[in-house]
Structure formats: C-alpha cells, structure tokens
Length: 332
Figure 1 (cartoon, rainbow, N blue to C red):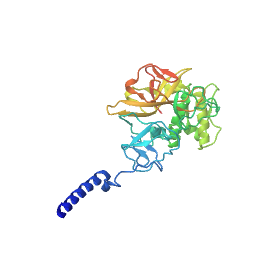
Figure 2 (cartoon, rainbow, N blue to C red; figure 1 turned 90 degrees about the vertical axis):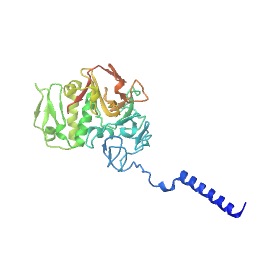
Figure 3 (cartoon, rainbow, N blue to C red; figure 1 turned 45 degrees about the vertical axis):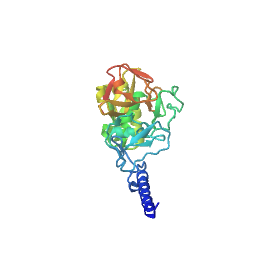
Figure 4 (cartoon, rainbow, N blue to C red; figure 1 turned 30 degrees about the vertical axis):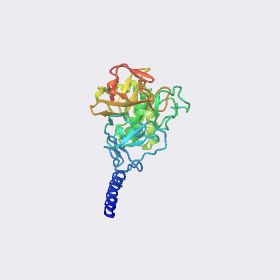
C-alpha cells in the first residue's frame, strides 16, 4: 500500500470513529436536559406539576417542599420523568396516579391542595385510637394523615370530615365559613365564638350566650370544634349536603349513610383520563374515634384508587357499604 493510500484510509477511519462518538456521547447536548428538583417550599397542586410551589402542568419550575423521609407506595410521574416516591410524605408523592390519568387541577388555596399536601405518617404506620392504642383492624388503610385528633371519644366519622373542612378554612383564613349545624338544627358559627360568644345546650333549646371573651387562638378554635363533635353527626352532615352524580365527583365530596349507626367517607384526591373518566381516593375517621386515614379498595387492595367505570352499588369500602344515592357534596 502506498503512503498516499495509507493516509486516505486512516482519514476515512478517523471520520467514521468521530461520527460514532458523536452519536453515542452527544457532547453538544450536555446541560440541555431539565433537572427536576424537589426542595424548597410549595403549596399549590394543579395537575401533576410543581410550579412556583404549585402542581400545575408537567414541569417543576420552582422548588417544592416535599420532605422525602417516609416510605411510600409507588412513584409519581413529573415531566415525563419518574420521581422516586418511596419516601413520599404527602398524597401527591405517596400515591402515583394510574397509567393514563392526571390529577384534576386544584387552585393554590383550594381544599384539594390542602389535602394533597397535608403530611402523612410514615408508610406502614398504624391507625391509632383517641387513647393512643392501636385500632383493631389495621388492614383497611393505605396511609394515615398526621391530622389532629382530640384525646377523647369525640372525633369519629362525620366529625373527621367536619374537622378537615374546619382545619382547611382555619389555615386559609376563611373563618366565616367555619359553621356547622347541630342535629337539632342550631347553627354553630365559629365567627361568633371567636368574638366571645358561647353555646348553651340543654336549656330547652340550644342558644348563643355571653360568657367568653374574644379569642383568636388555635386553642379556642379547637374548643369550638369539640362542641361541634359533641352535637353534630352524620345526620346533620347529610342535611348540609346535596346529592351529586359520580361524573361530577370532586375532592371534599362524601359517601354518607346518615343515622345511628351511620358512616361517612371522604374523597381526598381525584384524577381523570383523556376520556374524562375519574378515579379517586377515599379516607375516613371511624368509631372509636381514630386517626383520619386513606382507605384501600377491596376490589384490588394493591391499588387504592376507586375507578368511575368500576363503581356499582352497593359500594363496598373496607369497613362499610354504601347504597345508591349516598354520594353527596357538603355545602360549606
């Protein structure tokens, strides 16, 4: 082989090698891939994205405060990438939406955001009763909320639903919306209690009386709610709610059977697919008074989502069965 031919062959082989290097290593694309950070502070949930602390789209553009220090179930998809949810400590990271579904948008100040970002106990945590003992049935729940629980036998199923709404209104400064009817029809308004009014029960009829002083503290709010737990129930909760169709289900809705005994469970998250079909998570408190917890779906315990196309009545949840017409929206 002549020297000229050897140089030509070497040049040709060098070009082929360079092309292969560019194809495999892609050096000119380094740094273009978006980094997905899960740090900082965030509150709003709207879809599956975190944006300025909110979830609303498919990209994390601002830090979102998710302390990844608990064990979780599954993973969550954000911007086409999989966020390891093995340590998710809120609904948003603990529970992956089903394939083909996205979370229904929720405004920053909404009840949906409040519930989706409310802290959960570590995965595998037991449901505790009001006295600190373990609930007998530990097979019904998929997660437990770190939700306030009064240390007495008062905060049961309907009370837990009212507690969720009241805590949400309190934390967002919507004090005038914290109002619940007692079974006898009396309307207990926190705005009056906050200004120093007190409630007298058992003197012929329930009534407001003087006797307190203005108190805007959380402790005073908790005392007000204790009175609500004592004199409200599934009966009054149902009277404050309206029937809705399954296709309109949203976070905060309830399945309820009023009475004594009765029961109620609450919708705490909702997602939907491209056809508009929804899936949702349910949570409950119960008797004896116990921690608010996310329920499993008896139809497929490994997947806690309840799917619209699967719903038929009577609707079976792990510890209660609801009849047709039980789906309602509290009008708070």
